[in-house]
Image 1: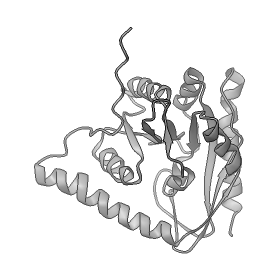
Image 2: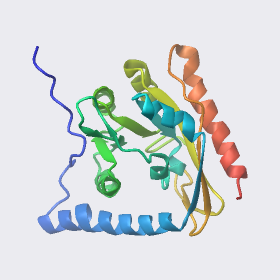
Image 3: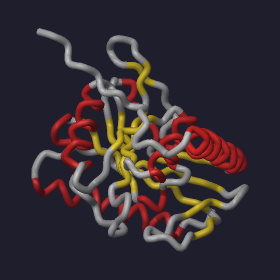
Image 4: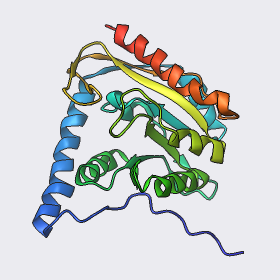
Length: 236
């Protein structure tokens, strides 16, 4: 039987205009954003809680979906320190869902500097296509990182896509939250948080589980909201 074609993870979405506009939007701005992000990250004092459980999944070569609220996105790369391979020895890591909009394009290009690759799609009319891609790449050996309420909310309300990926692939769902001792809160739909330089940061992994029946679907939202309550009370 012929091999199934692999999914191209890192790919550009819609064109960004002229060649100069593409260079500015797709290369210059993402690189500058990455540099600023990396410098901020370098000042942070990072700890991890619940890390050993997820490390055990990596050691057993199991796949998982890091699941988190959109407002905690900024420093979420801290939650994925692994470099993985599939059974054939091909490099694998974590992939995210990024919209086909220009903002999504710039975001994908920025995260790519961290080795985080993008599956292009949205939760709107092309959401079903994006879901198929996510299921396929998990089967090809990638982990996923998904903003469960993103990209447009409502805030802290879980959408079904992440649950479907777990149900179709058998991947573990790993709730995760990144808490900051000091942070700026942006005036965005999700009340995005950006840690202040030299803050203490804790990456807290929740209890991993798999979707086995309809009653499990509420478990992810419950865990994430419990983690959010903990993070809001954290002041270092």
